[in-house]
Length: 276
Image (cartoon, rainbow, N blue to C red; front, top):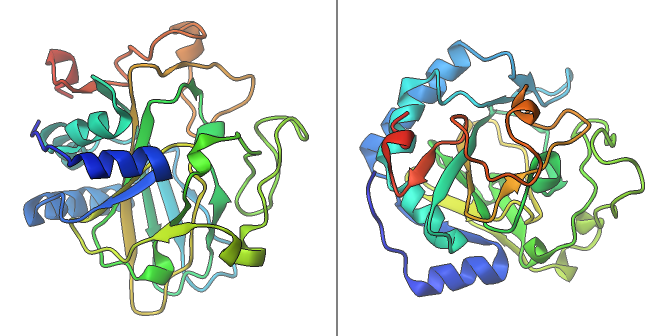
C-alpha cells in the first residue's frame, strides 16, 4: 500500500461539496493493470453482473460487482495502490475498509444515461465516514462523465429507484422523499463534473447526488469504482435485497456492528487482514 498526502484544500472541498477530482493519481502501469482486470471481468462476468441498458439501445451498459476476491488484477490494484490512504484522508477517518468494487462499462453508442441518484440508500450500511472512487481507463468527455450536485451529501436521504423503470424496490414507497427533477432546470443546482483522462479519479460521498450521460459512437467508457468505509460506518441489515447483496451477512454481523468482516478488508492502515 502506497501513501499519498492530499492537500488540505482537497480535503475541505470533499467535506464541502461531497465530490472532488484528483488528477493523475494513478500511474500508467496501474491503469494498464486495471484495464487487464476489466477485460478479464468482461470475459468472465460474475452471477451479480447485469445489463443496465434497454434492448433497443444501440450500445450496451454493463455492470458487475464484488469481484476483487476472484480477479487478481483488481486485487493487486486495490491492495497495492495509494487508494486506501487517499480514501482515509477524504473521509477524515483513521482507517479505510473496502466495501465493494463496481465495474461500469458503456460501449460506443450507448444512449442510456445513469440517472440522478444517491448510492447509500441502496446499501446495508449507516454512517457518515464513507466515500467512493470512480476512475476510467479510457478518456471520458465532459458530456459522458459523472456529474455531482455539490453539497447534496449533507442530506437528506432520497428514494432509491431502479434505473430502467423507476421502481421503489428498496425503501417502501413514500418513506423517503423523491429526488428533485434536476434536469428540468440544471441552472438551479451547483453541478460539478470533469472530463477525465486515464490516471484521473473522482471521489464522492455515498450520499452525493450523481448521474452520467451516455457515450458517443467513437468511445468506450470503461470505469472502475471502489467504495470505502471509515470508522463510524456500521452494518444496517435490510429486509430487502440490497444492491449489491451480501448473502448471509446478517447472521454474522448484527445491526449497528462495525464492518469488521473478511468481506470488507482494511486497506488503511494496511494490516495482515488486508492482504487480499
